[in-house]
Length: 182
Image (tube, rainbow, N blue to C red):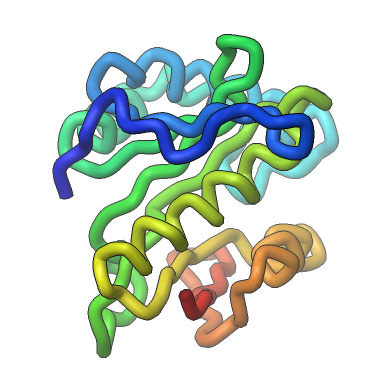
């Protein structure tokens, strides 16, 4: 799915302090830094099951994956006061989940900073993805997430309007597939 740089989906308001913009290849380093920040935050709490404990920027495989996402997928960023607070990557479903049975927009990854300035940024990007899907005549978003850690991430997506459909496991990583009608 191509990306379109410079398209603003939302502008700051008192109720919505984020600017949502299209991303692209120039955002790879910022996305890697955000993953590194979030992995450190999770690891500090002993929650290493989702993405491990090592920074993404130290893994050649992860660096290549992030660069590929930024070059080939649709990337959206939520910024506050000129700093990216969250990214979402939209594209094709992952090969470890069932193929779609209807046209959709798939959330390949969502990552947000851990500080208070980022509060709500992920929800803004998911709402933006829903608007994009609806504007393209698509009736749903799908996402998969880590289902460990007492289902905290599953609960987050449920709070964003997603409903669980199918649990799955990749090696020893428990996952959950979810869908949101738009």
